Length: 442
Image (cartoon, one colour):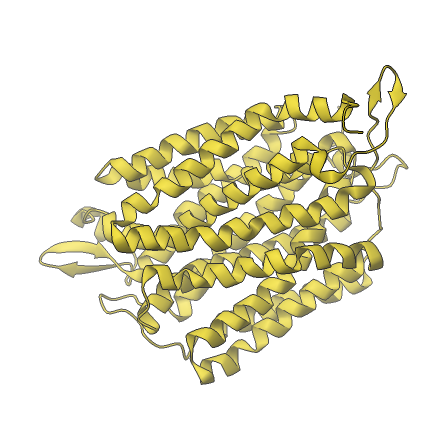
């Protein structure tokens, strides 16, 4: 029976399980920071009295940093190696987290958006480098499983993020918190955790492993590599990733708004079992508070997200990644239909369940897109990270739909996005086979 640690052993016999564990620590931190901004979206609606569309600038500036810095961070990794790129990203996150305190003294919406851009810039370095690095820390055939396992740790951070912000910032009563005075506290926690991780990467072994170059043959002849944009399995992966990030970020950003607007009153028998601060009573009915919504996001949605990541990493050791991606996309498109058109508790359950089926989409799409790129993997990774721009634009559209029509109709946007991801998953094998054999554009 083969050891489970075999998926971390490269062809030279070296085991990289310890290095992979540190990479998993990166993903916990990136998930924590990403989970925090989804609660900030709702909080800034209260503290700065901005509309849903305007509050979406939190996600816009956050993911704009990914778009702007993805190529520079990829170049930086190619020039200076994995270790230097990772430590640089961690230091940027620490610096950004520490300057949240002076931002609370200025206390303007643009000031906070600027700080979030800086923190996201550090995360761009981390994600651009850590995602492809996870795929090379062992046999190529297990690259998808490794990146999904690493991204499972990302989901742990997503669970913690909304709760950490909710603990210090969100209201546990019927009255919304309109103060930003304590907002620096959760980011102080981030600065300490990320600083410790940066120290670990300075002293730990971080080998600069290059991905193997897969052979392309037509009539048994190895052909030259085409330009990246003519690798259709890669080019369409960028489009699929853009749309996935749009759908995911839209759901994460407006989950709290949807729960506040659409959740039915909680039965009294259930309300008695919940901790104080989760619900408030009005006219004899129990309604969820902002802090309760954040807890629902953390321990409902993001817990299912984490479970989906861990089970997905196991499933993908045996199942075809592209078919799994297509099936999960199909299911999530159907769930979004329920979220938009159904009423009562069913759409709440569908919205929560969508987190499970979103779980493997980003890392699987990422791994499928960079498959077969060889020494262009770091460059391809930069373009894949740039696709996160979808997360910057989608909340603006969803917020506008919610302001003009309703929060329910805003979820038509992720429905369309998941349908596109489904199509890419089902078509990937044909696209990849053609890219590996076609001479026409070589």
